[in-house]
Length: 407
Image (cartoon, rainbow, N blue to C red):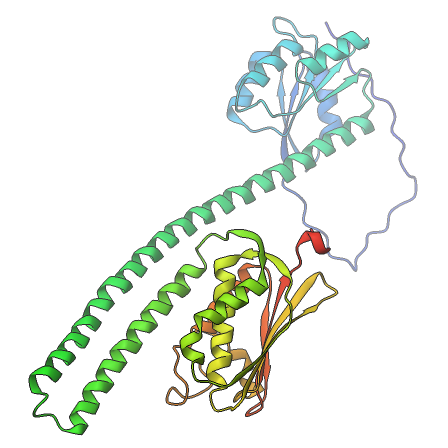
């Protein structure tokens, strides 16, 4: 049979501690469950007297059977387990605990007066102990050890709850994305069909009555057909915008000079017959999704080409500056019609236009797409301009690690 515990005197300060009435009392953590296992009631009483307090809910078990029953009903932060018990020893009980999925991760601290040799301590660790104490137990040391495991349990529990919440939010996001995909299909199919009918019937009406139409009627039909075409473009751009946030980034090291040249090639029809002075500085390589970054350049150059239409010659400048914050700052500058800076905050919003549709065509989604792409790459975008004095769009992207960007 095990001898009773002997409690070492603990060192206490004799100076009274004045309560701090100025600072609010911090909220106490929720108590955690501690399982005490010993076949001698007096030993359990000693352990209980050491650990009693608001931080712990103590459960006492006098045998391995009682301990296993308690482990079925309750989640414990720690087990304080006596080694030498009748019928089933503490080592044997620890092995049973570690074999069960529900309890395998519960830390065990062995307490014994009989085994202090290295081989016996190693047997305890082999059985699954995380710590080993010999009798007589120092109350301060036991309290300290239990406090460490209790805090670890609280943090692990909080982390698991956060992970579960994240997993739940992820499932909700998957469902929302599927619903958005279904909505996109509805938009693509159900809205396009009426537009096709409108365009078809307008053309049929024009053919059927072309001999009887005056200039005003023909102009009205042309306006209807043009409006249907603009609506079709708007649907296309909305679908592209909705997909932009869901598509997976395919990051690779890309040469921005090549992307810029390909973007210019995409604009050949728009710049045909125009007098444009291109000022293109060498651009660095970055880590990005090449196809998305090409869209950025195409949108920004297309805007510069469009809003410099009244200029002859038009000037479009593209360059890059080095930032001390581990970023490249790219810019597209033009000498076009510019904009009032008090509306700069609206420039990158969906359906936001700072010029009348009669002056400059567009759906108001292009720059919103650009902002979303840059944001997904970890950068930010802004614009500066002045009415009738041109505009500059800036955006930042992280430097690749090879050229000194932070990890």
